[in-house]
Image (cartoon, rainbow, N blue to C red; front, side, top):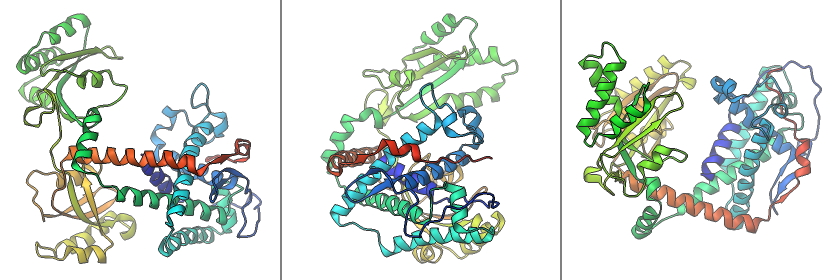
Length: 465
C-alpha cells in the first residue's frame, strides 16, 4: 500500500494545476538555488522535508483532492473558499490537520525509502532528471503564457514560500522513493510453498463468496426476517423474493422478475472490514443455503442466502478464484493529444485498419509510445476496456479498438493469460507484507528527526478567493 500512496502523491504533484493570476501580490524573491524557508520539518541523515517543501506538498495535494472530489465537497464538509484551519474534519481535527497527517506519514515513508535507496547505491537516472526539468519548464511556459513571472505563478499556486528550487527537491525526493519502491517490488520472488503458506494465513482476505440477496420493504420486520430465514433451498429463497417483489411492485411481470433476479445474484465478492454481513459470510463453518437477515438504516430488511462454492471450493461456500488474470499490449490515442475525441478515434482507426494477426505490434508500441499491462483484473480499468478484455470469446492474439468516452481510443492486443486470480492476490499481499516489513526495518535505521514546531510556518492556500 505504501508504494501506491507514493505513486498517487507523485501523480498529484505532476498535475501542476497552474492558473493565470493577476499581479495583485508581491513576489518573494530568492536566489534560484535557495529555499525561502529551509527549516526542516522532518529529516534523515541525507534527506529532508522543509517548511517550503511541505507547503508545496500540501497545496499540490489539496488542489488534486478538490479537483477529484468536486461533486462531493459539500457532503465532505470542505469549502475551498475558506481556510483549511477553520474547517472541521471531525470533532477533534480540522481539514488542515487531516491533510498534514496524511502527508506527514507519506513523506516519512519517502524519506525512509530515499535513505534505503542511497545505501544501496540506487539513484535517479539522467532521464529521470530530464523529466523533472521538463516539469519545471512547463511552469515557465505557463507563466509566460499568462503574462506573469515564474516566481509569481508558483507562489500564487503553491504558497508564498515555494519556488523552483523547492519544487525540484520535492520532485526528486518523490521520484526517487517511487522508483526505488518499484525496484524493491520487482525484486521479490517467492516459492510455491511460501505463497501457499501466506494464502492459508490470509485466506479470508483472498477468498471469494457468492450469494443471492434482496432488500424488502418491511411494515412487519420480524415477519419478513422469519419468512426469509425459513428458506432452506435456493428455490425457496427465489420464490420468497418474487413474493415480496410482487407485493412491492404493482405490475411486476415476467420480464421485470427476470431482470430483478439477475440483479439479486452476486458472484465472487471479497471480504470487507466493518461489515456485519461480510463477517457472517466469511465466518468459519459457514454452510451453503444458510440465510442472513439484517434491518438496514432506512428501515428495510436485507436478506441473503449463501451459495455453494462448487468446483472452486475452499470450503463449502468460500472459493479460490481460478480465473486467470489477463495481460495486454495497448496503444493509447489520447483526446488531449489529438485535440478532440473524434480526431483521436480517427487516428486509432487508421492504424487499426493496417493490423492483422501477423502485424509487428511491438514496433507499433514503440512508434506510438504504447505499453504492456500485466495482471489486469476486473475493477481496475474502464468498463468498456474490461468488457472487451474479459469477453469469454476473446482469444490470445485478438486485437481490438476501444473508445473511452472523454478520454481517447485504445488499440488493445490480448497476450497469453497470467496466473489464477487467487494466486495473483496472494502474491500482491505477500509482496506488500515484505515491503512493509522493509519499511519498518528502515524506519529504525533512518532515525527520522522531527520538528513539530516548524509545522506552524506552513502556509495553506485558499483555492477560491
